[in-house]
Each structure stands twice: as C-alpha cells, then as structure tokens.
Image 1 (cartoon, rainbow, N blue to C red):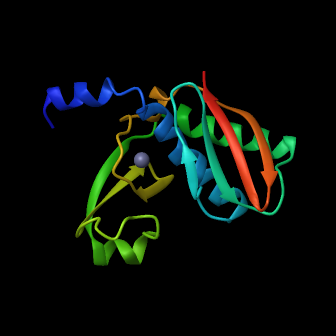
Image 2: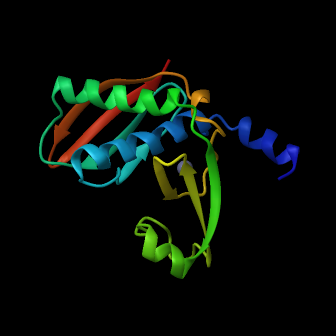
Length: 154
Ligand SMILES: [Zn+2]
C-alpha cells in the first residue's frame, strides 16, 4: 500500500483504526462472556462508538465493569494485530461469514488479534493493541431484544 493511500485513509474523519480495533476486542469479549454473537450493527466514530447485539436484557453494572476490565487487559497485553488471507471455502469452515457481502470475492481477509480474536474484515486497524488507549463504556440500553453498548477511548 502506498503512503499516499495511507494518508488518504487517515484524513478521512469517518475512519478511526483505534476505535475500529477496539470494536473487534469488544465483540470477542461479548462472545466469550455471553455467547450471543458479535454485534450485528455498529457505528464507529472517533469520539464515541456504539455496537448493537441481539440480547435478552440490559447489562448489570458488574458485567459492564467485567467487559471493560477484559478489553483493557487485552489492550495492555499489547497483542499483535495481523492480517491473513484465506480462500472463501477455507474461511467458511473456520469463520462466520454471514456479514460479508456476496461479492466479497474468493480471497477473504481475516484480522487476527493475538490469540484472542480472528474475524473477517476489510477495514483498517492498528498494529499493536496498546495503540488503542483505554476502553470505557459510556452507557448501555436495552430495547426490543437489542442491547446497545456505547463506548469511548481515553
Ligand atoms: Zn476490522
């Protein structure tokens, strides 16, 4: 990738690799704690972001603290963030590709965060988790089987 191309992505205010990488860690943490899947919808911005999950209730305060603690633990372990490419057939066996568009092509890009998370993604990420900063949940709410988690980075 040329440096010109990198510059272009960085100047795009909509895109924030730290936030986006934090979203990957949050999703894996939600999967491990509650086993209800990754967020089905999200809105990622520099100042604050939100992720929506199919759920059956709001989170308790101890659960919110547990999520923050686990996410920050992964950040502080300074895990390596790397990309791998799989054929679509291989990827389908290992990963959930339901969120990928049908025209995603035959090479599937997987973003791996240390030994903690791996998921298909075409976005831009940081290269080590300690670049993310400190993860903080602003609020959660629950409506019509959807849990919304709002978070920021300090
Ligand atoms: Zn990503």
